[in-house]
Image 1 (cartoon, protein in one colour):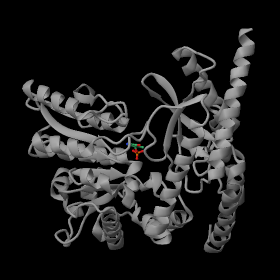
Image 2 (cartoon, rainbow, N blue to C red):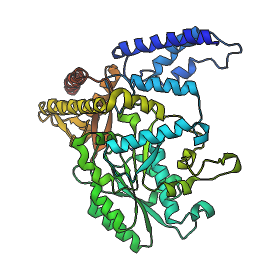
Image 3 (cartoon, rainbow, N blue to C red):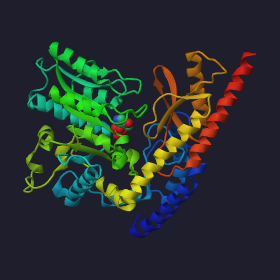
Image 4 (cartoon, rainbow, N blue to C red):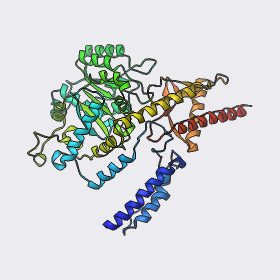
Length: 481
Ligand SMILES: *Cc1c(COP(=O)(O)O)cnc(C)c1O
């Protein structure tokens, strides 16, 4: 492809993307292909000769698109959003064009310094302690892993990095039963073992019970364990419950335990002054993570990792072979030492595009819009007594199920019914929702946060849920008689 062809193809692609976004509501949200369907429609070998761009784009449309779940569809209500926005797409386009490798300051000073600046922008806009500095990691999973590794090295005085584990170390890590699976994954990876992860019970609002946490820590200490880290949740994945972050921080301080807070989805809410009461808890943490790639209109991947003591972090990760040493190392941040991989993407660029294009006010009004949509939906659900809401609606995720008091069902039948209901809605292609289990109850999660979601999308999806539930109920009734 020469430069003239590049210009032409880029124009074709830009137009394609514009049409895609214009027509996105006509696509089935969740891909309806079956297993192996896409794989089997692809040729077995690399083409010997180069192919024209038009053919590639045609196959993208005919084959690949069928197997795409449209995360940017305004009726994507599953999991949490992985949202993007036009400024983010354009920033990413430039990043790919520059094609830099931002492993250290010298390999692109702008990448390092823009990254530092946008992190501080966000920190300050959230009103967080200026003890925090940070960097961009790929995901919250990585950020949590990096945090736990730092805790491990701090407590072992950097010995485990040198000598490996031995019998002297019996670490325990604490999170709630509702915490994200990435915490258990990190506990496994760093060599502590799942059985030493203490999953502390939650209250009726799905937030950790701090008394149980303290009891467990005391018991572990008396049994010869070293409590390594408490992971608090600012918004659990199932219900967006918020752990009592201040109390957790006080316990962490009292027992000298590392404190990490996982705010992957909900962290963005700290940009709203109405959530400034959450800042006190975050400020007690050693590290805090949230994902602009979830609810800050910046495309995957982009995870903000804040840390109070970067020296510990760097000491955990830094290995400086001669070929990576530079004359500037004393004056600059080499982010290769702030995480796992050497090579790093230039992620700050798209985030910068987003923050400048929206402005803080633009971002705040989008976040508030989504929160108001959730309130509207909660009202609609509460007005229909065939449905029940199963968790407090704290932000933009609503957990509910069908449970018609006029059609009594066992818990097992209810689970079955709600599973079927969800499947029917997702198969319709109109909207995509996902589920969780709360106290043994199959729960439908309606998670709002896609960049372009409108109230109409929510209302229409709710109508569809009501209609499908009624159909399913009458179908089941016919089956019995
Ligand atoms: C989504 C989520 C994660 C994982 O995020 P990744 O960036 O995909 O690793 C972790 N914790 C919580 C609370 C989440 O909601």
